[in-house]
Length: 113
Length: 113
Image 1 (tube, chains in turn cyan, yellow):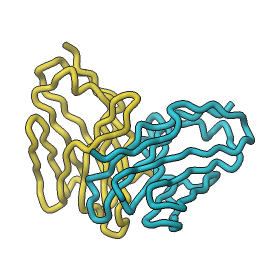
Image 2 (image 1 turned 90 degrees about the vertical axis):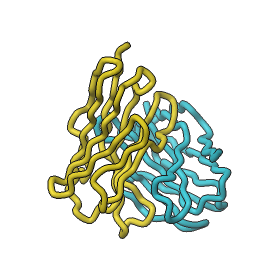
Image 3 (image 1 turned 180 degrees about the vertical axis):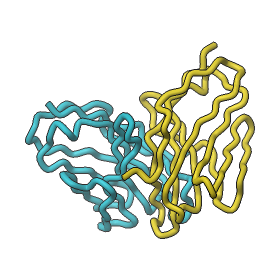
């Protein structure tokens, strides 16, 4: 079974802090994604990566950056956390060309106070 | 501007009855549609999909219908079971987007015993 592991289930941070959300997948998937889930807005794509050291902006990249130094690991960075970044963050991975096989982690609920 | 919309944020249905979830889209370039199911404290999991060249796809109790002229799809669950209580996300794919999916806002389904 594919496993996508997100390092924290809950995080509480203060405004202005630098925040790192870590994600690891164990199935050698080329593609990795970061989404945020907000009520009524569904899942919105922040950033994605098709290969190591490669990144592309999604629909809402402002205030975020990412890092993919190894194929299995994709990190989301909030350079200076703000209260409007309080959200559920979901990491996902997939093989190229297999759109329905998007595997998600359990999510990180981030609260920025 | 949301390209994929689920206009009903919630749905309550009696066990054994039919659940109908609706999804509308605006981008005529979408070629593949998917439904994901999400339980609390878990990541979304793939449920069922349909290609734009079809108008129906069935998998056990789950059937997805696609009406391209109306840019509308629906998910039918028959019969509904208490274990179906979850949030359901509609998602869509375009060839130009690679492996990215665009998600709707979600519909929370409650199946009452």
